[in-house]
Length: 239
Image (cartoon, rainbow, N blue to C red; front, side, top):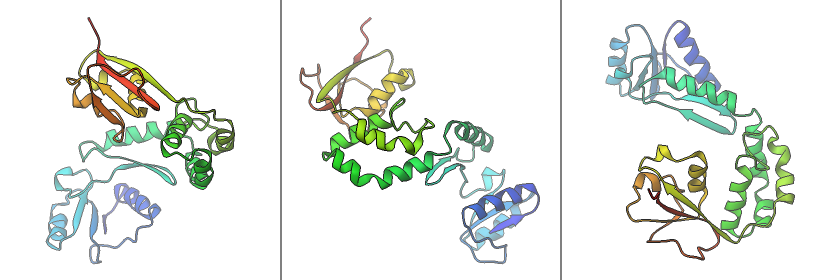
C-alpha cells in the first residue's frame, strides 16, 4: 500500500516499482503500507486496526518497520539502515558507497558464480579455496572488487595465483581494549585469519573482529608451528 501525494510519495513509488512491488491504495489488500502524509496519525491507526504493518515517512515514532537506503549492483545489494534514527545519515552513506563501488561489481559476482567449478578444481581443499578467494579479493588482489578490472581479471586470477603458503603467523600487539583502535592492517589480518592465539584477558569485542569460523585458542603464547593458513598471535603491547 502507498498512501500519499507529493514528492515524498513519488520517491517511494519509484523505489517500490524498481523492486517489482505491486502497489495498491488504502482500499486494497496488502501486508505492508507506506504512508507519506503531513498528518499520518489517523491513516496509521486505521491500517494498524486491519493488521497492516506501517512505515510513516519521516515519523519513526509511527513506524512498524523502516526502509534502508539501497546500493544496487545487481546481484550485489547493500542495505544501510539506522532503525529510523536518521534517514539523512543512511542517504549520505549510500551516496559515499555509490561513488566507491564500481558499476561492474555485479558482473564480478556473476563471473565468480559461473567459475565455481573452475575454482573448486583449482583449489580442491575448502580451506585453501577460501584463502585463495580472500587473497584475490583483498585490496590490490587480482579480483579486488573495488578495482575497475572487474570480471575481466577472473581468468588471470585462476591462472596466475601462486601456491598458497603452508602456514604463517602475524603478531598483533593491542594498544587498548577498543576495537576502533586497531589499525586498518590489523583489522584486515584479524578478518582473514584461520586461527587466533590470544591471551585470556583479550576483550570479546576484539576477538569478534575475527571471522566467525576462525579458531580461537586462549594460551600464554603462540606455538612455533601454528598450522596451515594464517594465524594471529594476539597480545597486549608492552609498555
